[in-house]
Image (cartoon, rainbow over all chains, first blue to last red; front, side):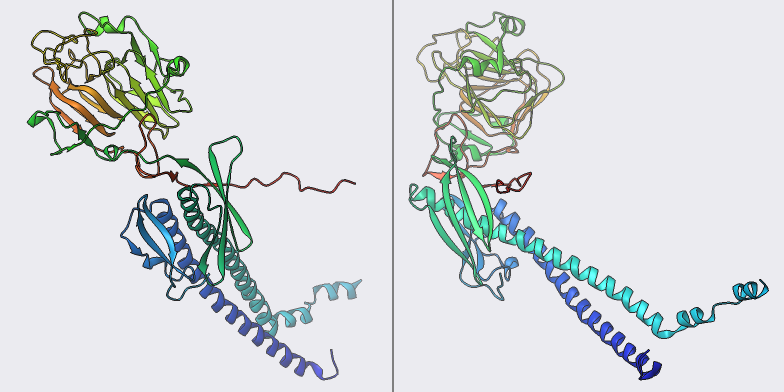
Length: 96
Length: 399
């Protein structure tokens, strides 16, 4: 017990709890956003893995589902040796 | 004594008040919620880290693919490359030969992570004819009611790369059987006869490194109720210097593909109209002025046994028929590519159709088929990721 008495201690504790709750809310919101991004990246990673394994399964040109996965766009190009996936130009909203 | 008893019976009001305090309850609730929130955050961050690694590996694979292509197309000059994936992610690749192997290793470094892939330098790709269900030689005549899937492409058959004599290799695939021809054909055959799947490996065919086995004689799959099940770990081409008699269904397991190629070396292919397995006057010799050589000819393929018609047979194999393809089954379904130089004879009144399903066609551009000349320019085989093995014990400096 401090000299300021139990009333002020309770007030401090309440403020601390409120701050903790706010912190939790912020972390929860951030986590929710991260979970959503993870889910999107997981879907994109699976799609890219499919494209890399079977580059011939799809039309030539930019693979729009993979936009934002990297800083550069991913393109399916036809070469003499068959379709291939390459980095090209800039992606919309790209990140690494 | 009484005082102690009274104290024991009296409830601890201080403790009760403590638990009744809303602040304590709020603290506990907040703590529980915080633990859940933090746990979820840690899990999400761990997921993000795992995904980041996966994504970097995929970026590395895309860059490694570009790098392997550049390496092969530059005839081994383009050893190092840097591929910009954007937003500061640079994938640096280097290609080095794998010691004591015909393979190359691509090491791709992305965001301080290393990923290794291996590939093989191929002299070219698989001939395009193997990408079709049915290809006919320019002069092959096909009975109108023979085929289910319409027009077949016409093209010269891909050239066989003559395999060297490999007795040991043939032993792992097929065994000589002097009696089988007499069992199935009235007069037997002039050549040696071999039975597929009865070699040293049994049904687990021992595929040599070259992927090609030459059979100097006729190849037989004896008739029977159940399909002959063969196990192949990699692609195998059997070059038959004689005829192939496929008396029952063939089922191939294990990831490898089977191609049976007959050639007319040292004999004349003919249309066996009466189905007795030997040439008789009146049976047209295809591509030769007169018949000569072994009585059974050479290069012919029989789908079904001539005297056991009325069955439906399925073949998980590709067939390259250098002679005449005979259908002696009510229906012959071939899932691999069928390439026929000269076609086609139905043997027996109940014999029916050839159905080329194309269900097991090989990939063409980034692979080669053993025994056949590769076409086109050199190229890398598909990249295979190499899993890094962690050392059991970390290296420690000697004391």
